[in-house]
Image (cartoon, rainbow, N blue to C red; front, top):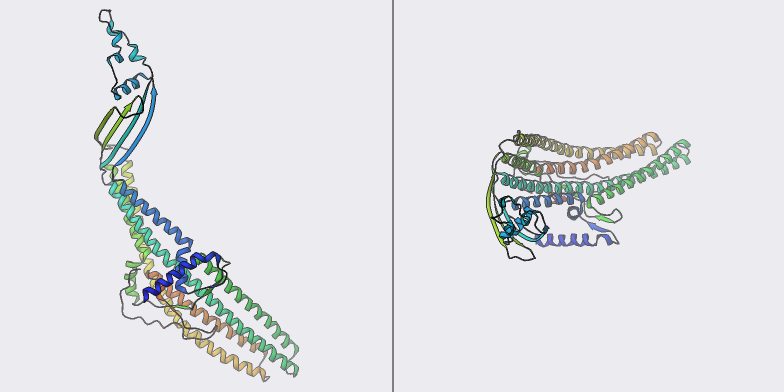
Length: 492
C-alpha cells in the first residue's frame, strides 16, 4: 500500500513538472511534493549532478588508461628528398641496384668509386600512400595508473556524497520556505486580530467621547493607532508574499505561477542522545564522508606523483603498408618494448611528491576541524531545540496572561477608570506576545531541522503533518523534547 502511495506521489510530481509552464490555476503541493519538486528543478542540485557526471567520466578515463591505445593513420607523401626517397622505395619493396647508381659504375674508369651516382643523390620525386595500425600498452607505470584510478573513484564517491548533502540542504531550504509561508500567514492573522481590536477601540472611544467621558484627543489617538495597525496588516501581507517568492525560488518555479500549500508540518526529534548522535553523525554525515573521500583522492595523487621516481615500461605493436598508389601491397610490422627511467631531473619529481603529501595533510587537518565543528554543532542544535520547547511553553503562558490583562484594561477603560495609553499598551503587549509565540513555534522546526541536518538524516520522513493552529493563537505545538534510548540511525 505504501509503495502504491509513493508511486502515485511520484507520478503526480512528474505531471506537475511536465505541466508547470502551462498552469492556469493554483496547484496544491504538500511538503513532500514540494521537496520532490525542488530536488528535480533546483539549479544548485543540477550543478551537483554535473559534478557527478564529471567524476564518472574521470573514473572511466582512468580505467581506460590501463587498456591498449590503438590508433589508425593514413597519409600521402610526395618527395624528392634523397634520404626519404630511398627509404620510401625500401618501404614499398621497390628499391633496385640502379637506385644506388649501378648504371653509372664502371670499374675500368679510374676513381670509379668516388663518382657520385645521380640516381642516389638526385632521385626523381616519388609518391607514397601509407596506412598504419598501432597499439601501445603500458606494462609498468610505477603505480601511476593505480593512483589515477584511486583518485578518480574517491572523487566520484565525494561527488555522490556531495549530492546527498546538497539534497538535504535543499530539503532544509524547502522546509524553511514552506514553514516560512505559514509563519507569515500566522503573522497576518495576528495583524488581523490587532486590526479588529483597533476598530473596537475606536468604537469604544467614540462612544465615550459622545458621552463626554473622554476628550477629542483620545478619539484622534485611537484613529491614528488604527491607521498604524492597518499599515502593519499590509506589512504582514507583504511578508507572506516575500515568503511565497522564496518558496518559488527554492522550487525552481517561475514567480508568476500560483501555488497553494498543503498542511502545515512539524519536524520530529531524532531518537537518541547527543553523546550517541556525535558518533552516528561522524559515520553518516555526507559532508564528513565526502571529506574522507577527498583525502583518499589526495592519497591517490601522492601515488601518481611518486610514480615519476620509478621506471616506466611499455610495449608497442605496429603494422604498416606503403604503396606508390592507394593500396595495401607492401606490408611491414614492428613490435617492441621500452623502458624509460628518469635518473636525474633536478628534484622535480621529489618536490612533486612532497607537494602532494602536504596537500593530503591539509585535507586531513580540514577533516579533523570539520569533525570537531560537527560535534559542537550537534550539541548546540540540541540545546537550542530544548530552549525552543521551553520558549514555546513560556510564550503560550504569556499570550494567556496578556489576553487577560488586555481584557481587564479594556473593561477599566470602558468604565472610565483607565486611560487610553494603558489600553493601547495592553493591546501592544498582546500583539507582541502572539507574535513571539509564532516565532517560537517556527524556531522549533528550524532548530530540529538543523539537528537532523547535522546528523545527516534530514529527509521528508522526519517531517510530519502538524495539527491545525489558529493564526496567532495558542496551541500544544510540537511534542516536548524527551530523548529516548539510543537507536541506530539508518544511513540516508
